[in-house]
Image 1 (cartoon, rainbow, N blue to C red):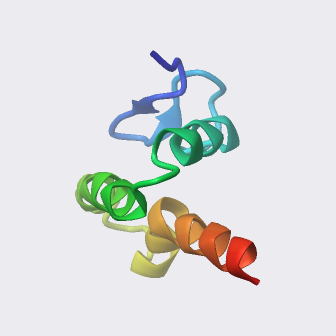
Image 2: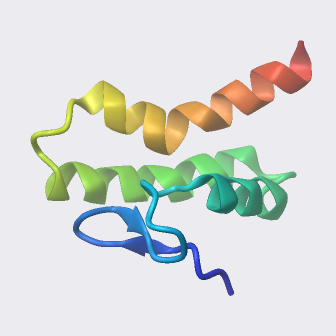
Length: 80
């Protein structure tokens, strides 16, 4: 079990205090979902919806990059 879970409604990391998902949690998620990228996207998408409700002042693009954008960047780097 990770200590790098989200602290809601501020969406910081419970392990290090950085914005969630923090670099450590991203590494953990990459490993956990290494053969299931769609499942990872669905998992993070559910958190994106919650974060959007908790932080309505944050632009949608910022939240999208924070919660989902990094997963696509990883796949593009590996493919390229």
